[in-house]
Length: 179
Image 1 (tube, rainbow, N blue to C red):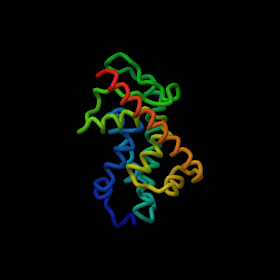
Image 2: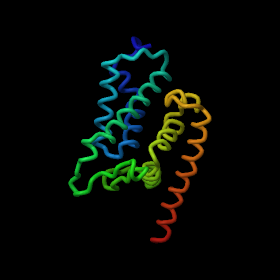
Image 3: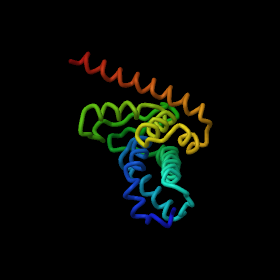
Image 4: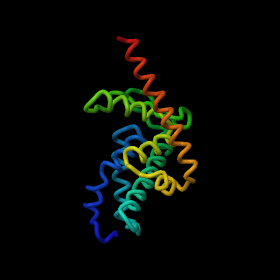
């Protein structure tokens, strides 16, 4: 399968997948850009032996998640001070990453609300929601990609949906109170 697609074709086909996962797991464009480059460089360097498009997609997602974890847990990231003087919150401390609202703009308000709610979830929940809804992977493929049992993925997906629903309701409630 590797011989069928050039690196350029792989990048063109999976740009939105890799960048979407990177952005939701790093919460900063600059970090997502770095992860994006690292993933495709790793693909070019390793030339993984994948047997199908689904296998390739799973490899890219798993690799992206690994680079995101490496990026957010690095000593560099933990010691970085941003221009506003505040240190990026530690995901272990918060369980989620707060996004500066000025960093992102979307076409609709609903897209922004969904992104912000998704970003406020713990990484494990973001990962399964991203793969299931945005990448159209089955529970079996998600379990295989993450190296976990299907039952665990079903449970995590259910909990993630519930938490996302709560976050979205909180956002809607806040808007009504301000109006």
